[in-house]
Structures are given as C-alpha cells and as structure tokens.
Image (cartoon, rainbow, N blue to C red):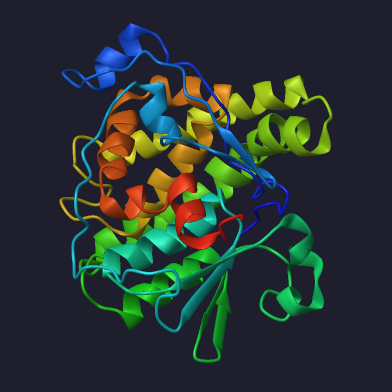
Length: 297
C-alpha cells in the first residue's frame, strides 16, 4: 500500500452541507439537518461529530447492527492488537472488518512520530499503518490484514465464493489503493488536512485541482462497477465494500472529495448505506476516541 504516513494523520474538516439538489438526489426522503457542526481538538486529529459523508448530505442514519455475532465490549478486547492512526481509511478498514466479524481487539492509537521508532518499525518496517498483531504473529499491509481477518474468522464471509466475484473484489481493492488513494486521496489528505492543520503551511492548490480530476475519474469507474447492485460484487458485502466506504468517508472531509462524491449519487448513496452499519458507527473518530483514548483528569 502506497499511502503516505503523513496523510494518515488527522481526518476532520468542518464543512457545510452541499446544496439541496445533490442532497435530494442521494437521500430522498431522509431527514436533513441545517446546523453547523463543531469539533473538539485532540492531538493531531479533529473529532468529527458525524461521519463526513453523512454531514455532506445532511442525513441522519439509524444504527444498523452488523452481521455476525455481537462484538466484545470494553476498552481492551481479546488478544488482537491493531496499531494505527485515528482517521486513516486503511486503519479503519481493518477495524471495520473485525467489527463485522464480531471479533474482539485492542486498538493502539499512534501519533506521527511513533511511526519512526524502532519499536514500531519492528512491527512495520516501512513505518506505515496499520499493523496487526495476534499471539506473536504480526502482519502489515491493509489488504493482507483484511484477507487474514476474513480467513481467520470465517463468519460472516467477506470474500465472495464465485471466482469472478472474488476477482472483482480484488480489482476494486487494488483500484482503491493505486488510483483512488495513491493518485488522488493522498494528495488531498496532505494538502487539505496535514498542510494547514499540522504543518501550518498553505496547500498546493494546483495539486488539489489535479487530484480532484483523478478522484472524479476513479469514482466514476467504481460507480460503474457498483451499478445498480447493493454491493460491489452483488448482494453481499465484501472487503471491497468496506474499503471503499472508508475511503469515501475520508475523501468527504475535503472540498474536492465532497464535490466529486456529490457528482456520483449512486456511490454517495452506497456510502450512506454503509455508514448505517454498527461496524462503521463504532469506528468513527469520536467513537474510537471514546473507546480507546485515555480520559483526561
């Protein structure tokens, strides 16, 4: 996975909802809200009160239980540890997969400087996120983690049984990594979140404009794969759906991503459907902060 370590830091940009036409086209009949949402500062992240894609289209969603057995409750859950930065769509994908399986885990939130330490490089020699640990076994790279989780905990299955559907899932996962994120999402994440909020420098507007075109192209291709199906390979959710929904939410925190998503109503509607699942509700930034960051005082 070619994500930049810096881009994985921070995920939050307070935005107003887009105009009524896009909102109506994506979530007709949903109840909209007109309030402006605030945020509370945390180290290198902003706490979003709602998922960006929900804020963009002004939709209140009901929490829908994830398939499979109930997840474990509590701050420390099971013998699995996932190391990563809050706000990363790659880290969130791994957490959502575990939530969908009903499998307990410990989430270890990291700051940017932790990625350079010898301790973390022992888990991930390239200093990226996430890294997965279980009983002394360590694996890094998001796709490897997702597939390991799906094989290790078979129910519910997140890989299609059919050869063609499984190939389509793999194709989408690689499209997300190579074109949606590496070619575009990383640029927008750096320039719209990292540069102004952390480095205190001006964004590269020309780079953002180029990235917006690449995002729009990638989303158009992915919308074609989705078609009129509820999920990318058919009726059942797969690892590809999890990854795409996490990246849509990440992109929606930037103005370019917001515009690009609004131009593809079927993908925006897909993102809203995925945001209703408890696995996504429980892995938003405020949910992870509440569950895993120590309380002050």
